[in-house]
Amino acid sequence: MTELAAPLALPRRDPALIEYLQQRRSAPAQALAAPGPSAADLDAILSIGLRTPDHGKLFPWRLVVLTPDTRAALSHALSPLADDQPDPDKARAVLAKLTAPPVTIMVVSTPVRDHKVPVWEQELSAGALAMNLSHAAFAHGFSASWITDWYAYDPRALSLFGIGEDERIAGFIHIGTLETPPLERPRPDPDRHVAVR
Ligand SMILES: Cc1cc2nc3c(=O)[nH]c(=O)nc-3n(C[C@H](O)[C@H](O)[C@H](O)COP(=O)(O)O)c2cc1C
Image 1: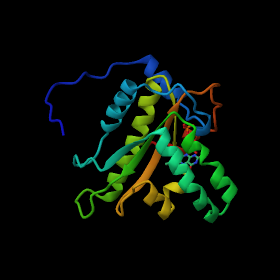
Image 2: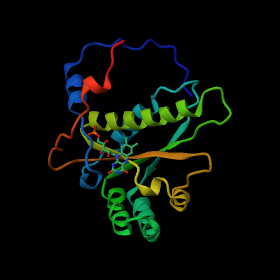
Image 3: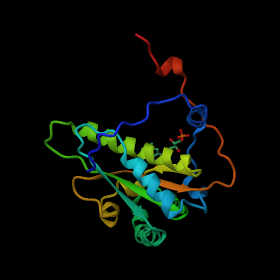
Image 4: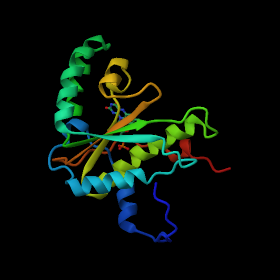
């Protein structure tokens, strides 16, 4: 853990950042293609991801960069498990989301049990980390997709991914480049989802 007392910059209005946040849109994972982040870009994306709020400095998460070779092997091993899913053909088809993208980061929630910080808050932090990784990927000029899919829940799949008893997969952050811009999707009506009291 780094303990630094150096002052950080105060926020300043940043129209480009506002525009990015207003337009950010996930990519379809299977459409993510090369180029992906360079090794230096990936290091920066991971560092930004790790700079995520968490109650109590527990850092209750870990990241695993799944290389293309590892993902190909995992997809091969997961394929027979798809037979036990409610829709085996679809379950097999979505494995393409695991193998197509140039870069994939697995976000694992590793909450500390029996701690005064509730597990719920620690799990929220894993979600925030996933979102930060996604923002970092976009900031470096790539598109990203945060997905889970059935293999984030199947016990035998979890063992293939090396997930421990007390851990959960918060998601896979797939990163790459889209050939065509994504279409907007329906967004919530602020009148229904925001209250002022
Ligand atoms: C925790 C989480 C899990 C998700 N799991 C899946 C999934 O299993 N399959 C899928 O197609 N999309 C999954 N998604 C992605 C969403 O379906 C969708 O692409 C995304 O919310 C689009 O949001 P955006 O347009 O604001 O980027 C998941 C998203 C989140 C946050």
